[in-house]
Image (tube, rainbow, N blue to C red):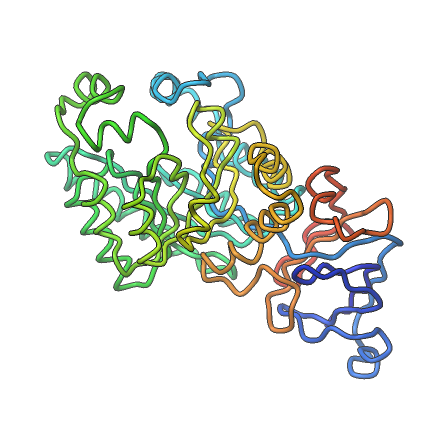
Length: 406
């Protein structure tokens, strides 16, 4: 049993003072310190410094750890050029990032206050690093492959990786499935994988409508992807259009990443089926893609959350940085309102999308909490300041256990 006494607590949109929190794995009570001491007289007490702020831990729902060795290997500014550079440098990048390299990336997320992350795993090489991570992890085993002749071999490999991840039984580790994208996964493979998702109630994610090249290929089997598929995979047409792809996910709430090229019909389908969009603004900018239309999502009542993507299309795995960049990219959004929405997209809304009992400072929620060292009393514009000033994260608690700080 522990009691933590911060100067300020961020609870929903409110800044609370003169309250302490009693917790074990979950938050048991939020009340004045004197009241908690009467109820829990033997609790360990941690009193924080002046201007300390306790807030929910951040949730990074989409990251690729296997490419964490990248800094200058890949080409930015255009999606297809980037994709070719990934293929050209794939072996060097993957071979150059062992478990220690991926653990370093995980530690960098912890230092930035990320208490939960979703690892999209293409090869399973990041399994050990994720199993050993202090954070809560959703390990999304990715399925990829558009050639029917390779379907059995690809599915066998996917199944083996899925089984390996299910053998990890530590607290806070969850197995999931990732369907790479509509252009890269054959419908036969999707159906087989989603049958497992349904029967085992696994968490599910997919890339969707990331680039103009994807839009043109799925609509007309034309555009920048045409040469790519003809030269590398001997394919002249896409394996399914976007409507056929989305139909597979009917009644299975899914986290769709990017969605910057989605049309009105596709947005309607996302809304009807209770799907969530993952917003990765830095990745979209670096790969020459459009900015997510947050206004359209709101008009369609589609929830959205924030994530970093991987170091193959980002320069750091820092959600505060990601939210700040998004704040400036969406220059037409009301500043304070949007800053608050971004914070919710990295905490409570992300927890809801992933089905996790975390994301807010509230009784009954898991004690995933971070402490920020502010330099003054927070104002009503705290949400903006948290994104602009990148305050030091001095303590990180995950499931009630102190993982950073002392």
